[in-house]
Figure 1: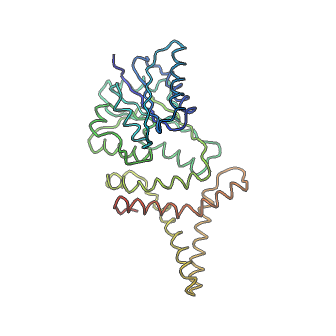
Figure 2 (figure 1 turned 60 degrees about the horizontal axis):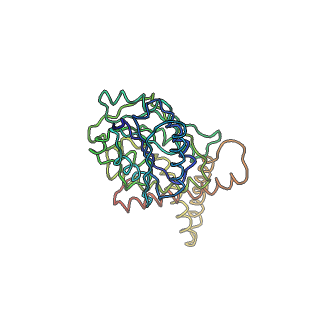
Figure 3 (figure 1 turned 120 degrees about the vertical axis):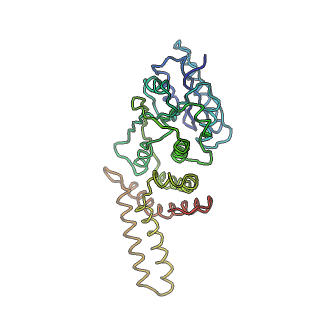
Length: 329
């Protein structure tokens, strides 16, 4: 008998986190014969396969039957490619996507099944985000992204609907861009996206390294590709953060003018540019400071982040615009 659901989970280098997700899935109220679990391991890492085997043996020892499949992705191509690999190998008629760092509630699948029995094609569940008591700017960014109206961490689609739109676009290397692209493809195809708040997945924001915000600026290069593929929907649905982007441009431009004018003997213009740069950088520093007691390492890392972010962000935005040959802010 074919299962109703195929749960697809992309994973990379987090076997301990993956095991918690699998344990949560093993507690589903839906009969185990009605769903299978497909784990797609990027990079073909032996520790990931070992973790899946450990979970499978544990389920068997507890006397339960649950179909779990592990698919290795020898070359790391990103979560979009991993999800495509998973849903295309699925046996279920409904594909349930979640992430390795998420914990589906016991009623996740059983609560959304009636929606598909009534003819739904795509459903979004509720993602409950738990952040740290002292969130960093990157933690707050992760929280915002997970709270968007379409996120693959809790997305359920009929398999034939995914086949109709072609699944995830593998050119994207970041989860939220590929999510938005899939959402826009559903909208353009006239496929309704329903909501099922009873289908809950819990996401705990993991601690990030202090330089994570700088590293994630690389994701801005994919804004250009998303805009190129869906210009109208991009303008309508993707927050522009124009004030922030303009501040980055002003910060870079002011220090550039200052450095250019200084050797030319234009001291007043150089000092004005330097003053504007200092004021804008101070504003970023105050916004990036986390709450709570401050230590020297926190202050030092915040200074580096505030000074470097405008240059890194603008670089990746221009890189994406050149690479994908599209003009956008």
